[in-house]
Length: 218
Image 1 (tube, rainbow, N blue to C red):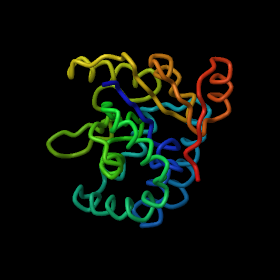
Image 2 (spheres, rainbow, N blue to C red; image 1 turned 90 degrees about the horizontal axis):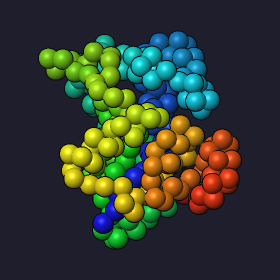
Image 3 (cartoon, helix red, strand yellow; image 1 turned 180 degrees about the horizontal axis):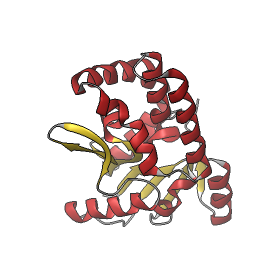
Image 4 (tube, one colour; image 1 turned 30 degrees about the vertical axis):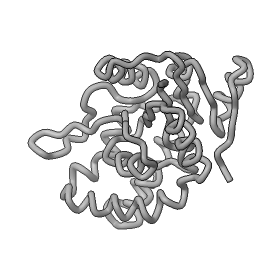
């Protein structure tokens, strides 16, 4: 039994859930349209360039959780899943997950996007384990800060090793599927790094390293 690790945004999904969540909140009138759209695009561009400040971004992206009733936000999240996420859940992704499940592998989504946004998406894929950036909560309220290590770039390696120690698992035979050069630290740790519809920087690295490259897009 090996670890089968999956990035979420632009890997299992044909889009970015974090970016789409921001667009959805704008459409619902929860946030200022012009300001949020501008900043959402800026952070997304910085992510693609590899220059994103994850703490600055999480303070921005979690502000609607800080400002609004948690129950209301959970209701909007359910609507978001149906309207924005299910249309970009790829049939090939479900098949890939199924293959690893049938092999007896331990399935894990490991994503920089916060767990509030991603937990119902991962559940919809039927994957039992999620490692995500965790929003800090104090007395049942979101603070806009990150709890613990952000699950981003090298932080993914830290979070995964903590989780493996807790569950007494190893990297032997491990797989990791990702589209982003931001995930190079973890891709370098696994036995089977697979790039999926990869960005240019990751694809160039994969070609040099002889890594397998696949597409899940239909």
